[in-house]
Structure formats: structure tokens, C-alpha cells
Amino acid sequence: MALGLVLVLGAPGLHAAPPAAPLEGARPPAAAAQKPPAAPPRLDPAVREAAGRLAGPFRLTSADGTRACPFILKPDAGGAGLAVEFDRELCAVIAFSAQVAGWLPDPSGAIRLLNGQGRTVAEFTEATGGSYEALREGDGVYFLASPNAADAPELRMEEVVGAWDLARTAGTPVCRITLLDERLPSGAGFRLALGAGCDAALLRFGPVAWDVEGGNILVRGEGGSALIRFARQEDGGWARTPERGRPLLLTRP
Image 1: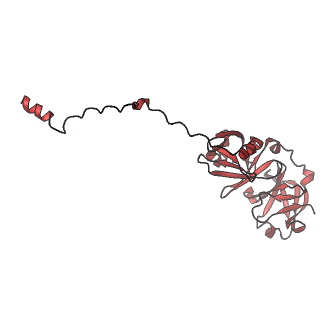
Image 2: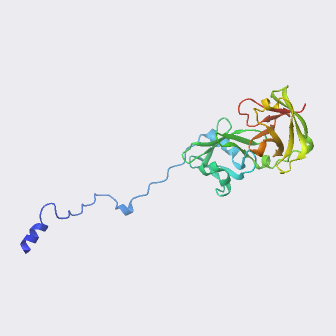
Image 3: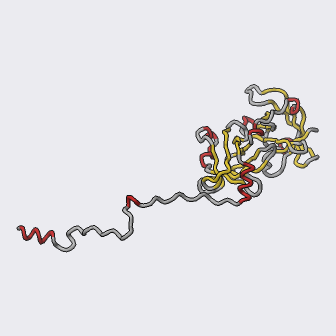
């Protein structure tokens, strides 16, 4: 019996193989070196120069101004581009902010917000008064504004109330609208009166109300679901921003 047991345990292929001797110079697994983090991207000097000019505090807002949060664009490398700092809980009101992991200035003068893989989440092109605007397909229009632009004094009522001409081309009015000094019962802006031909001029937008915000004139549709923002131009006129196809100008008659 004892002999048979010894033979079975000693049969080829049934006993445990002795541990392999470690290779000379090899480290034990526990002591294996950790993989170093990826180095931040090397930025072109021109990009760094542009970043130095643009970096600073901004305010990210939806087009109607109902959703907003502060952003800080930094000139330091971080993630796939340059570092960005913001309160993610506070900025959760703007859904795409959850994807933002960095930013880069574009050679065109735009500001690109990037995700962790370096892809563009939103591209903001320069507008007026130190602000930038982005149109996200299927989402809407958003603005990045410096604190100075965001804190610009509101338009005075006497500057805005009254008749305005709408035009596709400067000097060729399509129709006339009147911004009335009469607040809506809901408190969401003021009444607006349309002249003949305005439905076609505004692509059947059907505006019914107006308001002012951050130095811009806002024209709202029924229920406030649609909005056109007019920004003051250097020549003193007003134009839809962002342009999105055919221009729409607002001038005094």
C-alpha cells in the first residue's frame, strides 16, 4: 500500500512543478515600477501666446440667460489642452459642461472647449463686447463672456422702446416692429407689435415679446421657447447673433 501511494504521487505530470527561478535582474511583481502619467501636450509658442491673452475668468450662459455658471480658462497645460476650472455641480445646469476637460485657443481667434480625448465639445467664436458665442447642433446657443462684458450695464428703456426696422440687407427694411413699454402679465418681458410682412421676414418665428439682457436685445416667440438675440454692432446698428445663415438686422427707422 505504501509503495503504491508513492508511485502514484511520483507519476509523471501529476506532481506540482517547482517554481521557476526568477530571471536575473527581474523585479518581483509587487515592486514593479508604476507607469508614468502621459506628459501634457507640447504647445506651439503661438498657441501659448494666444492662451496668455485669453486666459482668465469667464461666464458660460445659455442664450436666454436662464442657465449660467463661472468658468476659469487657465494658461497652464492640462489634459488634452490647457486647464479649465469650474464647479461641476454648479455648472450641471448646462449639460455639455460635464464633458469639458480642457480648452485651446484656435488660430481663427475662437475658443474651443475640449473633452478628455481632445475633441471639441463647443467652439466659441468672437462676438461683440468681449463675448464669444457657440451654436451646438440640437442643443442651442451658448455664450462665454468675460466678467466685464457680463457685468455691462443694461440698456435703458428709452434706448429700446419704440419702432424698429428689420432688414436682411442694410438700408432695405423688410418690415417694422414696435417694442412696447408694456410688461407682460407673466412678467417675462415686454409686449411687441408686428407690422405687415414680418412673418416672412422672421421665418415665421412669430415674436410676441422682447427684453434686454447684458446689453443685448432679446426677441422671444410664443411661450418663450424660441429666441433671437440682437447684439450692438460697431456701426451702431444691431444684428442677430449668432448669424446662422441669412443676416437679420435691427435698425431705427
